[in-house]
Picture (cartoon, rainbow over the protein chains, first blue to last red):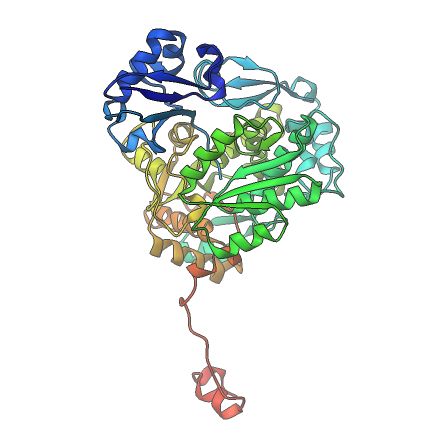
Amino acid sequence: MSITVKLPTQLRDAAGGAASVQAEGATVGDALESVFRSHEELRDRLYMDGDLRRFVNVYLGGEDIRFLDGLQTAVPDGGELTILPAVAGG
Amino acid sequence: MAAKQLKCRECGTEYALEALYVCSKCFGPLEVGYDHSGLEDVASVRRRIQGGPQNIWRYHDFLPLEGPQPRTRTGLPAGCTPLIRADRLAERLGLGEVWVKNDAANPTHSFKDRVVSVAATRARELGFDTLACASTGNLANSVAAHGAALGMESYVLIPADLEEQKVLATGVYGTNLVKVHGNYDDVNRLCTELSGDRDNWAFVNINMRPYYAEGSKTVAYEIAEQLGWELPDRCVVPIASGSLYTKIAKGFQEFIDVGLIDGDVPTMNGAQATGCSPVATAFADGKDFCRPVKPSTIAKSLAIGNPADGPYALDLARATGGSIDMVGDDEIRAGIRLLAETTGIFTETAGGVTTAVLRKLAESGEIGRDERVVVVITGEGLKTLDAVRDSFTAHLVDPTIESFEASFAESARV
């Protein structure tokens, strides 16, 4: 199962400069784990105490995973995850 | 300049004063750090402020700009809005002393002109040629207008269902107006993605965010100065992302730290609409983080379901003995009417939220009669006319004295 994970500019140096990486897994959490296996530095940047840091937003097909099942959200084959920093003020 | 670096609020990592907004180590937000050691002579700082222009640039010593004080007869100078003593509002609510900070009296009729002035000026210093933003409306007005005033190209992205008044008052400035199918959080996500690949675009509320947010401190500076260099006991402030609310407290703290005013940061009360209340809900639940929501409220300028500064707003409310409360759409409409009928100030829905929360706090006995309270009104009622439609009736008469008198009670007759 192949999933595309899009990285924000702030994380690309930890992934060899790539704007996106391929991942494997049935859930968002599994997919991120597969990314960490090849890019270990990303783990500390995104996770704290085993969960996403509070200013990290992850979207599946444009929907914030906190509206779905969080890291347990199922990801379809060919799905696209987008990681973005939390920022707002309209 | 007094601004020295950008600093991560979460882990403390420092960065140069560039177009950065998020810590690359932990994703925490970056904030401008200052060195105010050049401001020991308080009397001279005060004189410099008082002798400054009638806009936010009088607080140049406390803003993150490299260059000299911006020329004030160009651009769209924001700030120095009225602080009105609202005795009739106080009396209606059984309070002692209430003041209204009317930020509708800015060039594009909301407090957003403060933040955009700072962001746009800093963007020019950093060499950007294009302004952009994700907006719930007021920011859209301000970015489009500042682009026009400064001769910068602008791109304004808004939710497609925004109030017509706010759409019209943006497009008129000749901006590239983009309506996005989705809510503000969708628009903001799109802009965050766009900002990563457009090096010459200054998204005022994304890659300019640390500078932008500093503009909100000027609300506090003005309140303190207008009260004769004194602090209020309590402020009631609306919360969307939580940025204005937290920066007003930062502004008071800075003035206290340099010795311009004595005392403590006021009790800070935050105001949200029930239909978009992630911060108020987290406050009520005793949490220190916010669960995002899908907004559904007439207060569209506060409809941010994923408030980036929510955790800091929660900390501030608790640290100052305040609270973050929510009010429903009917209370918001009633709040707009209450403010209008007692002060002559017509505010948009966000101001209805703020006024309604003031009423709620007053009715619950939360506010002492000896307290000096400031209510921050952030925007103009003409931007959200639907909120007052059908809330009153007009007398329709024939052009005769008989018809006029027939439609009124005894008191209006000769």
